[in-house]
Length: 585
Image (cartoon, rainbow, N blue to C red):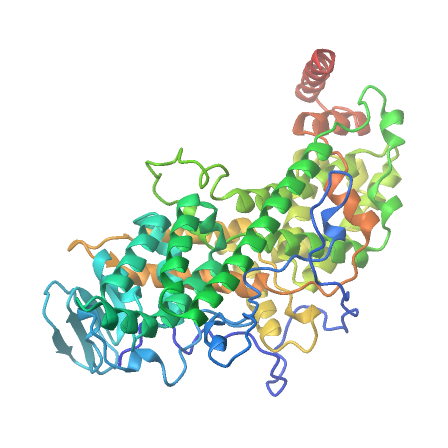
């Protein structure tokens, strides 16, 4: 039986197996603080409340089991467990090992080895041996070395449909549900899968049909459970919810246990979508508060009276911990499909009520906006103080915070801090920088050096990932990637590989690679932050107003005067522009 995934056994879930030796890591391996006890979502945020003071909501990727009173109901628990990577291999006695009536799945006896790849165009089962490699075609599905490499869209949809004695392995379910949106809308896929699942059981005998559907109902519920728990945001589309409701009614006519499992699955889905809505409203409210302008730039003394970050927190390690809270909180709301929808084809039904009321990538965009905000916050804090020694102290403080972020494995905050300190309004403060010991900063810059496609960072990321795999504490599990680079990697993977082959087949090798990237991210984002929350610090980080780019330049000129005529002209223009803007507002 050829495995559907080329990654089976290679991307296992992270574990706490302490029998493995601890890998060399550039990160500190100190004992993590005792994690907070609260882990339950306590309700909506308000604009005056810091959402990061509220415990982490239950994430769809931290899969909860369906409560059941009987052993039979246990069957409907999500097949993708909390700590499991979707690329872990299927269990030894997978339903895929049994026979199936689906014509696209008659591939059970293909042998495996390694070698070159050939294209598949025929509609009958064929196998070609080239050296030690086998390329085989079964119906409209093509395999190479027992791995699915291409197929028609219809065959891939049929391959997703469960039967009485067949259920697709988790890696295939995750991969196809993730990337199928490149070719058709999730609603269309769900409609076709449910229709095929029901139609395949029709024999013309009503009693026999009912018996057959009762047998396949648990598999259908299992598939829908994986869908709703891994891609819950698909169900913000009212059509998806209607389809789910219709299937619940259909299942209710055949199997009470399956109907009960469908009801519980729907309740969890609604809870998750409700938490998402509250989170998005809270982020919008916080952003509105943060949009308020800082103290007037007319007087540097007046702006100097504003509280700075060190008056709120003077411990770099504590501030790095709070930044990690924000990062993990915001990561937890990014749906895996958002990575694919950033470059998916524009839907002709984009104005349909419900699904497109909110952008398909809104949480991903909000996370990128957080990176930008942190960079501008760092620059604002440095340019704000009137005295040179205060500015130098702030710079040294943020260097220490960046180092602690590196030690934790929080590369996104690390890069945001480095970006803020390299902005031109900060970089031009030569008198201030002369008072700063930049040795540590230069080391951190070297770690995040963009040359050779961020090779130094990628090495450090692998070290953090290895540490996470053999973690002895909750703190060692933390891996927060430089997010913009992750998006860039996925984007170029999509752009660099054709989605369809010359014979019209879907290039499933590309889909495997996309799923591999996103799956790794899901493992990183399921970590629960072990640090205690500090309400005051978190409130400051997410709501304190920051300067715009023009305001930063003007604040920089007021800190250290222009050095040439071009800077003098720039300051004069900025003053006039900002004064005009203030008068209009």
